[in-house]
Length: 276
Image (tube, rainbow, N blue to C red; front, side, top):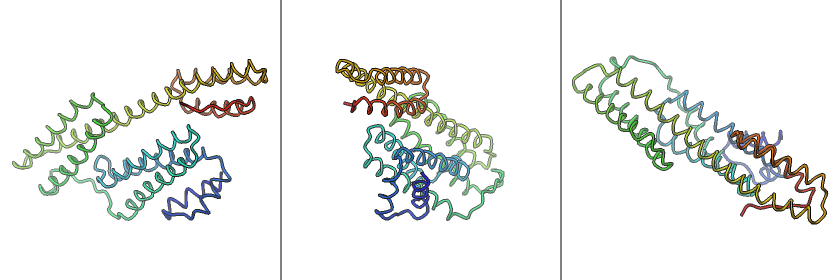
């Protein structure tokens, strides 16, 4: 585990690794640790972005993050299918995207200075609005892609606020109240999108598990008819019940842990199951 963690750090720092180092790291460790490393890296990047940019994440960084986040999701799926080679590719893709983001952030030496909006020049405020509007369009595109209908009215309000602020700039009126409302609404939309996507991912995993467990049930009945070890078959059935109970409570990570135990028992019985 230490070697694989070191391998992940090298990827993050240098961006590239030698094939021999990758093979050595993967060959000596449980590949499931790659998912834990990738998820942790994802969370750290999100924290850095929130701290650094809040709702004003540059578009190039936002594109990199979406690419890295999708790679983490693909890594999870690849491991579920036991596709280790694809999991390696997904892991490296995620780490590469997160590494690029970290490099961009570290190269930026600007300090965030909170200044009253009324003291900013109209030109700076217009630039700020342009960046916010571009970010909102990115969120809207993501929302439409994932069919999150509840955000439609919020986007209408956002665009209306942006126009109101532009009008206030033209007449030199203080727009700080509207700007604060706009930023709060954008943050709310971003959180809603994140929560909705997470819920859909959770539902997809539960559907996958349910279909997989049905196949395992059938294999266990066949194993019983063939006179396989009844104690191990009973253990497998107990673990399946536990997984189903955890899924009903939406405890996905715990269900995955129990599934890892189930795979060992199934191997002892001589059962090999692939999702179809």
